[in-house]
Length: 99
Image (cartoon, rainbow, N blue to C red; front, side):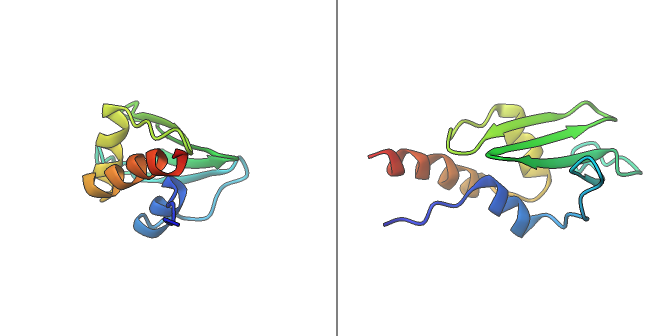
């Protein structure tokens, strides 16, 4: 059986996230716009990964298991050091799991 890696696991391994605040957001400097302060944030709720930057407006909402990453989501993830190959493995593993 192929081990399916989730986007939550990939982000946890590749991005140095600070502890979550009281609202569940992990504040971080946006790698996309390179803002000087941590106005970007990741949030992990149930099976959903959310990213929002309150400076440049970058947004990502990914439902684990869907295998669907928008062009903007890929751009955001790539800016944080997640490779296209890792994203392809994530989306293709969803196809293999369904068979």
